[in-house]
Image (cartoon, rainbow, N blue to C red; front, side):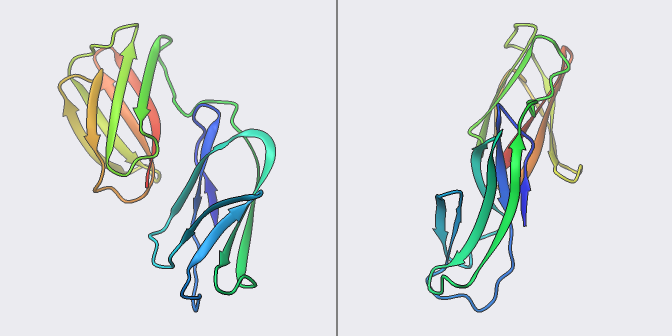
Length: 177
């Protein structure tokens, strides 16, 4: 199965999961559209996050998981064309900006926020929300304009980041791998 994440800056990530049994000792590779996305051992934690990929509605995305020892043992998934016409950063404030990096991440996120041209936002509440809508973490930061988050304990997946201050609210998306 391959699931597309919401778009961000014209790009998206493909989240791949699959079941297997009796695979070769050499592991497997993920390929698609003439690209080898990597070779992996079968004990690799799933989901496997691929990307960022361009959502320009021109590439018909296809992915195949192929056993390295027995290449005739494979499965494929057609995701299709992806169009990223809207940003995943939902900004209800006309002059607001939220930058989340690196994205995807495995350990730390650096967050920079601006509302109405001001980078110092003062104290703010931050929620990390799982893709199913449950709040994974809620905390208060001293300066919502710039802070770091340790997300190493979160499971791999897609998350929403909500930053709420007296000046307004910003939202963004990040991938934890």
